Image (cartoon, helix red, strand yellow):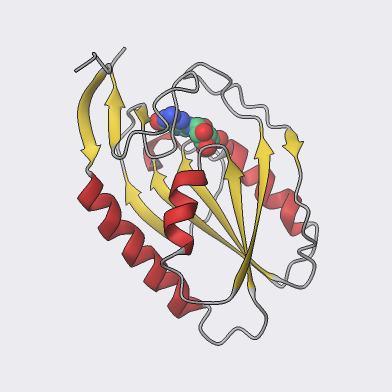
Length: 177
Ligand code: 5GP
């Protein structure tokens, strides 16, 4: 097997399945009595694997859209700058929106995206993240649906990259230096 540079598996495939099932059930329960279909928004690229699994565990009518914002570039250090690279096609005014993220670290990216989406006057805006690094938080972000809190380690796999690699790993691994 080639050297993957992964020093540890933090979340196994089986654990991922359990977490996604639980989150899907929580989201379904939360929006059960909502009249109009849910708008599920994924932040690319990291969230695409998680979102593909999550939406199949949400038993409600929904539409999906994606947006791309810039984050860390190809390194492991946050620049603190966030830029919209690809915007939504869908109007979210008056709609119930679930924003899906792979990981919330400092919260800088997410808090800016949330502020921007809130300015478009959705009926509601809830946040779902697969992973959360609470130790690293510098911005105020309220997470409504959280897969798992993890320590301050740089992780890859299940959509998360290092220099665009590793996104296809079916588990979450810790990337050694
Ligand atoms: P934040 O703005 O919360 O600091 O980080 C936002 C983005 O940074 C995430 O969406 C993700 O793309 C990237 N990021 C943060 N922590 C990690 C990590 O441990 N591994 C990887 N691969 N990306 C991370």
